[in-house]
Length: 333
Image (cartoon, rainbow, N blue to C red; front, side, top):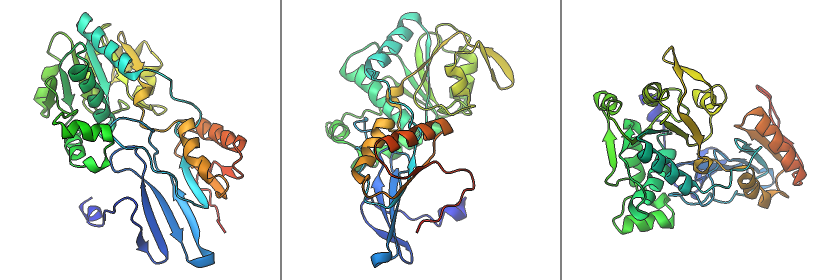
């Protein structure tokens, strides 16, 4: 790991650089998480130049904290993600639903569990809770950030206001930090984490991992899923075969740490916090380059999502859209 890190070089968005020979690279803000980038490569020179693009994970327009994704650079060939290529995000009022979950926890004295990815989703959730508690004076409860990694990545986020949108920069300019408000409690040690489960009454816990496959969230799920007052709120995509995906199917029980745990609590999903563009967002990003793109390869999506997005793009007039198979080799002239 240390030897690999010594090879890492940082580059700003929108400033071309040459990683090697006749290859020029340009990084564009993908807005998925802090520092995420789409990549445009120019290979060769003159009439022999080939332009290849990589979407990376593409973020959503008008999402809190970060700016909107940069437009796609003109490219001949594009590798494009397809995570939500088969669906649209629900038109939901995320803030109202979040306020309802908080109000229910306060009223019933239950636990509100947020499995969260340490970089991106956790900060967005804090931003929205800040709005509820500080600006809208909604029902309040203690919010435990039970994740040293989340605490560290939140501090890193604070150091990069150049990546924030105007609303977030306005908060900070007024001395109003959406990542820190009176109800937040920072939890680093294992003993502090265990102590949360011994507290009675309503409280909220933000802990990793986002798909419930590891991390401290598993201890909270094991303890509180059998309680009908518990509400677990998923904050984004849950991959196939993960515990998060199984919980969304509302099973009677799940296996955690080798033990069968009853699921009496409710499991909800807030798609409004997803950090991925949906089919509409991906299409909007691609359409300006439709007449230039010679080929589009759909990657980073479950097979059904990728195939559905391929058919959608063909219907939009994209001439050559493929879903590559494992170990397939393609020669681009």
